Length: 466
Ligand SMILES: Cc1ncc(COP(=O)(O)O)c(C=O)c1O
Image (tube, rainbow, N blue to C red; front, side, top):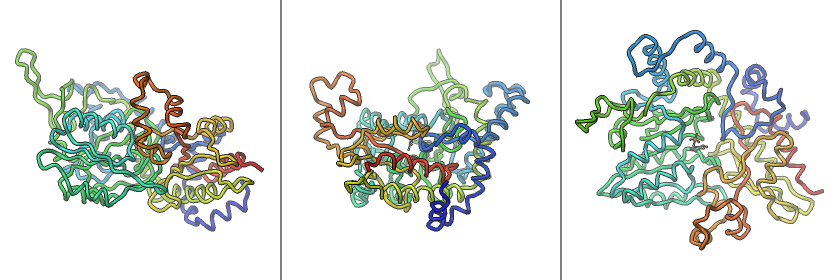
């Protein structure tokens, strides 16, 4: 590490020093990152687990016998106790009052979102959502359309990719009077990393909307306090917060909002009684009504271990770490210029650390201002063991705005004579006249260090013409 640069970094971002506990932890718990010479910069894609999380979980499995929680035998009770303990811990972690909220275990954030989509009483109502949303939030519109709800998108604006607040206010003031109204947005964008205002929750409530706050990209680095903000539905994925286990997420939902949902079916575990000849069933109360079949009872205990690990580090240190390193990455990357004076990157999202998280999304340009294909950048990064993400990150609305792809162009693509054939990304690119169809996302996370960011900056410098 060139010492002078680290000194300059510390002068500009002195609070980084308050996060040195993470450097100690990285040596002890995440040594495999450096052993494998990994430059891991896809924390928005997935978090990295600490070795002690695995050890604690394995110990639990080594030492105990757990049975299917749907019974009332000793091993079943033992599993139930752990699952219910983890459920309570999830609520406690987010400071959610158990009289007000429930935590439903799902397979991931998308599973949580699908539960809402398939059960929300959309008929004659409205589904309002920001352009900036993950596809699993966009996908809910299909349920909304099918049940006759009006679907409205609120655009985000370049260069910062924040929402046009005046347009949002206009739409929020017009809920359907004859149906239910659902407003969905991400607390943090997985494209631009913008943190959209949590104040919208109260504003939307005041006009009678239910609020779906997609917190999947927010909670890995920022505290969500459900005693201060009260969204109705909060989907999350645990692997994004603490890396292990994958395959588990949660829908944290207000009891009052959950009561509005109408499940389209019943399954093992979700009912109190179901009869074949009587052709009737009664759904269980609370979370159980939404957890189909046997829960992942051997992995759910690892959630509590993971949450305790995060608490032992503390969100203050995590947020500060991510903020300072993102600041340095932004400062340096956006200043890089070719010999012709042409900038190396164009940034999609806020230029400063204010109101944003740790993902920096850009496209790279050559000395003549021609974009490098994002897949080329990924393959070059792969060669030096840098893990980053390219494409649209399952967020096509933000992508379309960032990349300047218009509604007219998209209409042409999706109505062309051969549009029924499955479109590949290359067909799509041709269709939008050779415009870039994706970007490069570099995301800093809990255990990123200065070296990781420097390694990426040095890779980026290598793309500059002399
Ligand atoms: C903001 C946001 N929402 C939802 C999801 C979906 O998460 P999962 O793929 O774990 O279901 C993601 C994943 O990247 C995300 O970033």
